[in-house]
Image (tube, rainbow, N blue to C red):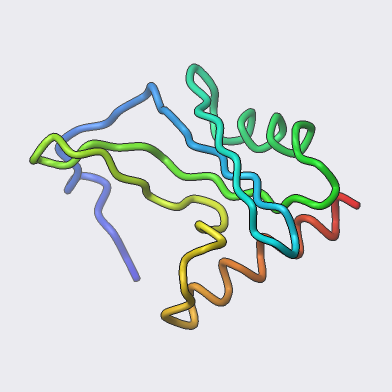
Length: 103
């Protein structure tokens, strides 16, 4: 799909990421928030922090127009969410493949 870079009205250069570490197979989750880092730096840090039994997921923390916090998934997803679509299945597969590659 083509896009037009001029249709954006704002940009944010400081990001806050939430990293999920989920133990396989029981799905126990621990989370850490990372600031003052790029996505790549966050991913590299998470890979070094993760136990061999853990998958990694990374979300961008944002605030909606009501002032409520939410997550935009950049890599993987909450492993305890139910799979609702083919996209969710691909996101889960990506998480598990990353863990296997790290092992």
